[in-house]
Image 1: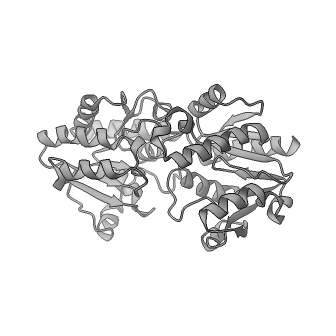
Image 2: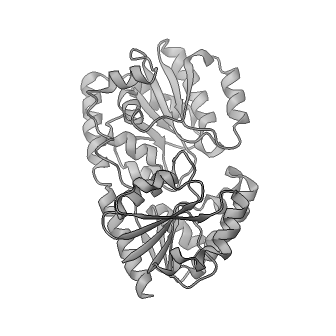
Image 3: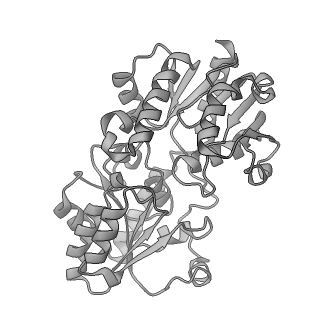
Length: 370
């Protein structure tokens, strides 16, 4: 089967949905005839995907890219040669005849538009409605996303659930090289810290985390808070919170973290905090569990679906509960941490890219026959 995977919307530094697309491309290239469709200035990095052809017809300018995708991309040779087109980030061409599979990550553009820039809300709500009518098959990254899609967006198309997986060659509980990795990255080996990983934006709950950390830091004069991730939008409130924080000198912004360092950060954290108000999947939670880290995240969200009983779950917005859960995590004894590690790794083992890819292949077969 010939599949064209549209990677033209992926940023230079892959995070969140971009991590999914990158992992998917590398796995699909080994099991089918794959063409990656990229921006004209973004060809080189995708050429390392095993056995994949790379075609780069898409303009680099964002506005031109979106217009090209909608009205030209579906009639290019990349689309015409493919049995199935896969739009992995909500969108699909509006011209051409290649049956499309579209991945829906979350429905927060509908349920919480205040978490996003207004222009993105307008664009992605339209894109999701269009895909619900015109795609051959829809893929959701979690049961939570599927349920919200079916309740909010009318569709008669098949909807499959393909949860993300973990690269177990990288995200493991084995930290034999962590000290050297920390040294090479300029990180202190002797500082206990709480770790957050994610794009800095309003829905991630960093305001809650900063308040909770103030409580934890009052009782523990050694603990630090490390924030890993690039800035998104709406970061002014976070910047203000950091500047005014009573323990600002113990909060470290790491920025975007290199792939080889991220697993070590998870493993060495006294706790991984992911107090997001809502996600489509919450990949940092899964990766942290695979590394055996004590995780504190949000109840009644998709993160609870991913973590099961392997993480401490606190109600969204309950700063006191978040602080208590973090205080408990950072004070675990060696034996207690080992017990948490075993449960975390066991939970993560249920999420593999092989399983995810198998569901994608089913979606492609269904689309081809549609």
